Image (tube, rainbow over all chains, first blue to last red; front, side, top):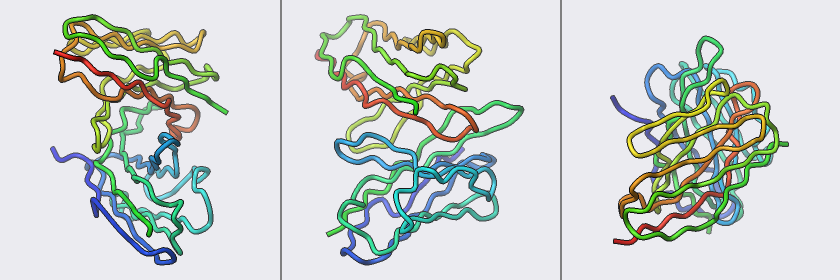
Amino acid sequence: GAGVSQSPSNKVTEKGKDVELRCDPISGHTALYWYRQSLGQGLEFLIYFQGNSAPDKSGLPSDRFSAERTGGSVSTLTIQRTQQEDSAVYLCASSLVAGGMAYEQYFGPGTRLTVT
Amino acid sequence: KQEVTQIPAALSVPEGENLVLNCSFTDSAIYNLQWFRQDPGKGLTSLLLIQSSQREQTSGRLNASLDKSSGRSTLYIAASQPGDSATYLCAVMNSGYSTLTFGKGTMLLVSP
């Protein structure tokens, strides 16, 4: 079946503009995760959804970052008033969480965000 | 706070060698540990997942072991091939099925 998809694959924006990044998880996966990968920083967790609720938002770096998930499926990560330090690859992953177990996280190809 | 360390940071081997990549983590209260590979400019591909109750997992030429009490995992690659060249990432999941904490990765180069 189809994997995790993300759009756009690349986004160049001017400092101060808002951007929206989209993630389509694997059908039936209840959990959805956003991560960010920056040069020299490695991969860092941003937010986790179980269904449409976000029990863990601890990784969001500032209040300019927000995310929502609708219908237990598609998720949108929004960055307001973008700054140059927001430039990174934003990765989305999904997994099945059931019966007290968390299964493999499958990653999308990422959105490369460049803030000029 | 969980910290994950991968050693070595980079490894270069000739084709055909068996090799071991190491991962250590500071908090042993994990739910699972997952190994990924990442090719340049690409996303992450899941290789193996080991639940906290398991000791090892195997897939083809790959074998991953987990020693939760000592906070260590190893990824063994048998008979390496040039196509194995990539960055290998280790990640652990702690409570609440949420955060995966990643190591910085081991960049592997297998030369023909």
